Every structure is written in C-alpha cells, then in structure tokens.
Length: 97
Image 1 (tube, rainbow, N blue to C red):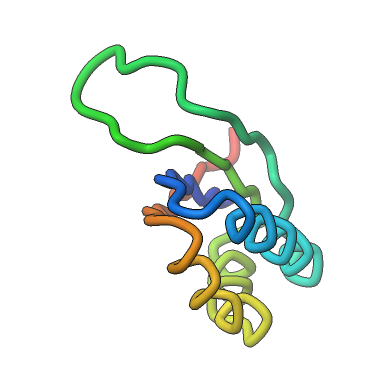
Image 2 (cartoon, rainbow, N blue to C red; image 1 turned 180 degrees about the vertical axis):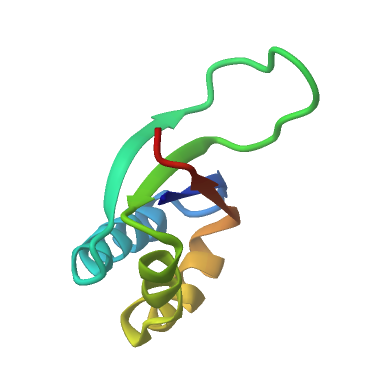
C-alpha cells in the first residue's frame, strides 16, 4: 500500500516558504518520498477554503512516510515552516489495486 501526504498551505512569507519547500523536498529522497503534484489554489467548488498552495507527497508505504515526518531533517525545518506558512498535513493510505 502506498501512502500520501496532502499539504495545504496559507503562505505568510513567500521567501521563507520557498526556502522551506526546497528543504522539505530535499528531505524526501532519503526516505523514499517524492513530490507527486503541487499547485496553487484555483477556486472553491464546495465548502470553504483559505489555503494558497497544495502539495501531494508520495511514499511507498506509511512506515516510510512516518520515518520522513519524524526524521531529524524534517523536524529541523518545522520552525521555518511555521514562520513561512500555516500548513495542514494529512496522511492517506492507498490500497494496492
């Protein structure tokens, strides 16, 4: 089963957000993760949305996802993330076909 993180962000500081995004992307490879998709807010089709950006991160399994999230590399950039944006991170497990 693969696992995904969907990250929605409301950006507070574009420069810091760019630094965070670069550091977060670099931390993924060591744990088998990758950025599957990323984009900017288009329009709200249903419900209320206040985020500016979205990223979908892909991992082979939930264990790899959790190793990445709990890694010293990722944990070290959380203060930068919090300065750069308000972010929601949600994990999903996708069963094999």
